[in-house]
Structure formats: structure tokens, C-alpha cells
Length: 82
View 1 (cartoon, rainbow, N blue to C red):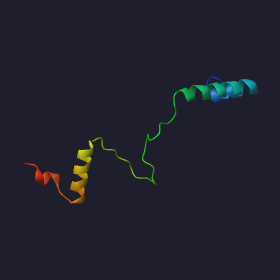
View 2: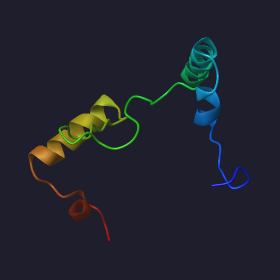
View 3: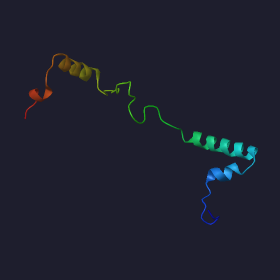
């Protein structure tokens, strides 16, 4: 392969530097990446061994009402018109 057709990657350029400079570049990259925050807790796919956790933002009275309906197998659609 001729020099004109060869592809030089960033890894190739870094490998051509001294060990101290390589470590300096790698440390700087890690420092900058850590600023981005990394993966958020709970982001992405559901873990295969866990069940999704849902939260209901309701008043205590509404929570009790929904729990009562579920406990007694009452269909809300049957209670509503239409």
C-alpha cells in the first residue's frame, strides 16, 4: 500500500508518541469524558433480571381508590359512561 492510499488513525498517531505523552493524552481524554456524566442510572434498557418500577404521582385518596378497584377486580371502563 502506498503512502497516498494508507489511512492513519488517531490510535496510530498516539502510538507514535512517547509513553509519557500517550499517558498524558489518555488522562486528558478520561478527564473530559467524565465531565459528560457517563451513563445515567436507570437509562437504557430494563435489566433482564428486574421488573420495571412504576411510580404513581397521586394523592393518598387516589392511591387508595385505585388499590380498592384492583383488589376488588372492578373495571373502571364499566363504571364510566360510553
